[in-house]
Image 1 (cartoon, helix red, strand yellow):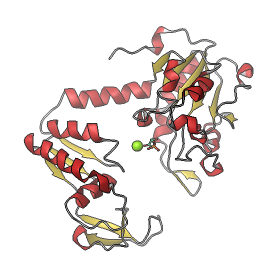
Image 2 (tube, rainbow, N blue to C red):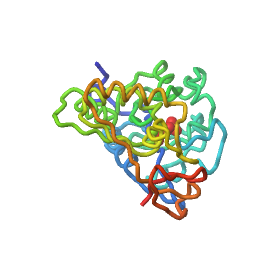
Image 3 (cartoon, protein in one colour):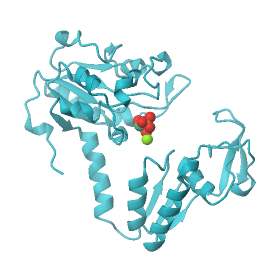
Length: 287
Ligand code: 3PG
Ligand code: MG
């Protein structure tokens, strides 16, 4: 796939809209995992060092188009020690930016236009910028305005994190070394469908954990109580298993569970076999 390269352009003085994924986990007001923020620094530093005026945008949580102060991105701006713009469609600050400046916009998902990939929202978001960079691999499967619609209005470039993720994935899928064991976790089979179907054709074994593992267990008739589970994915699970069988790939999912009475970090853990999950149990597998 041919892509534009940041190395080919003069970035000095250019207004750059940089899409990052700062959808990080917060517990008691503290960021618990800095991976996403730290991984985005390479592109930010490159842009700063080349004199661009960098405006970062991101989503955080799922506010469904409503302003929700608990889902403000201000904490990330504070963490990065950069100015925060409380409305992602406000452009008044642009004229005050100097080369090498970096600011962060408020949560894109405070507008319904973001998640609906609304053309008018994408156009407004693009206004005032010279180019757009996608460095938000983790949300690039979503058809939203800051990922898809925006590319109609600005020349689009991949950031270094996006390139790194694509390179890794391509390497795994194309240069497979046997034996290959693939581990996958996360909440939803529905958003990882293509990857799961591909992995079972190249791996010797697929180990499925997290919410997806629970959906596999549910598809085999186990009670999963009140756990995170995509109950409408049973046919899909069976299809993935059938593809796996054709390619001699074994699928494993956890049968020993850590459960609690609700999805809360303070919930009391009980260890149970998947055969003994009660209707009120929530599988969390926390340590
Ligand atoms: C993620 O955390 O998986 C990405 O940021 C995408 O978030 P979403 O599932 O709310 O679209
Ligand atoms: Mg995700």
